Image 1: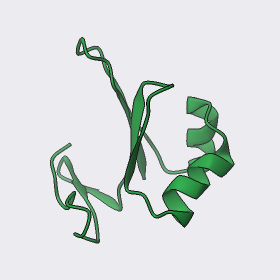
Image 2: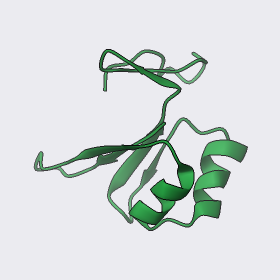
Image 3: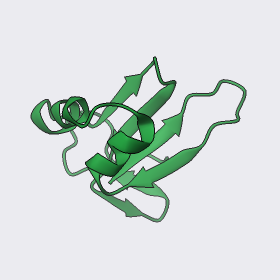
Image 4: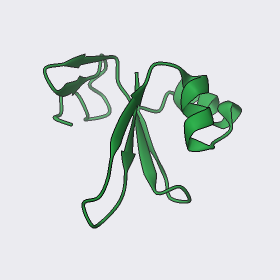
Length: 81
C-alpha cells in the first residue's frame, strides 16, 4: 500500500492510497521506473518529492488508523498517520 501526503503548509493537504505502483506513478506523474527503484530496489519506506510537493509512504498494512511496518530499523514502526 502506498500513501501520498500533500505537503501543503496551509493545511490544505490531502491523503490518497494506492495498492498499485503503476497506478500511483500515473496519478502523481513520476515515472514508474523511478518509483520502482526508490521503493523496491532501494527499499525505501518513505520519500519526499519536493518538485511535486508530496511525500509517499509505503506501508505493509493499515491497522485502526496506524501505519504498520514489519521492520523497526527505520524508526517508523507503528507510528500514527
